[in-house]
Image 1 (cartoon, rainbow, N blue to C red):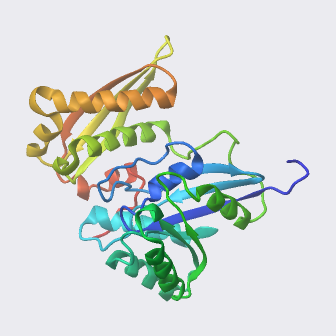
Image 2: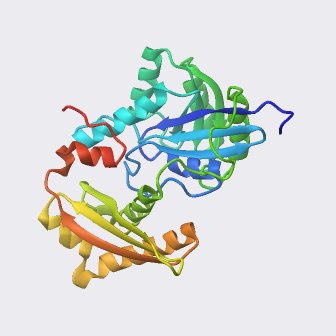
Image 3: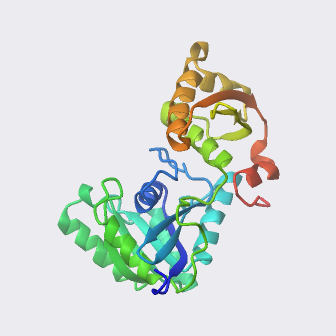
Length: 301
């Protein structure tokens, strides 16, 4: 590689909620970096992961889904997504081909048109749509004049992802790599551990899940035997949300803890002692410090 010019740069993925950005990010990197759930708005802040393709180091940025926000946290999430789109080397819009041009997708495209930005178009979930309909959708979108290249993929099963990664790697500017070759994510492990637990909450509670819920890693202790003790707090904004998370006889939180512990042990490669606590923190959605903890800027209104 010493004789070959290296490349390095940022590729930002934007899209409507549940377009499959986090699933695609994990496929592109070849490891689970972003949490995934069927629930919309799972990704709250920008998630940054790193992939190597030949002589290129690609720094992928997965952004929260872009939609019409109605609450302060939603506004912060959408702002984070557009900030990622404004400061990047390569911009890619991911669209769920099965859903087509939804109101959220139209809103994103209109904003790109107004700003004069160009992006690559990635049509996802192509295994769920008939070829004729897919080609018609691709034409309708490319006729808008803002897309440079079109890629058709299935983020879930990986179809087309390798070709996409190879193309994006070639798009990057020449320059030295910014991170070690074996680094996969740009985030403290305490944050990633909290995200793993939050994912299990989403998966286990599903429709019961209170919207205003967050997880923070309070303590991280590496023990002499090589194991790790992790204390995490699940914050809810109302007292009546606490029993939902705990479950009857504490069974729900035990199941969530077991699921999170299993993945943490796989990720860290050691035994994990995970302790979960549920606390009520009223009006945390109006607390700037909590937004900073999540990697979000606090909106004024």
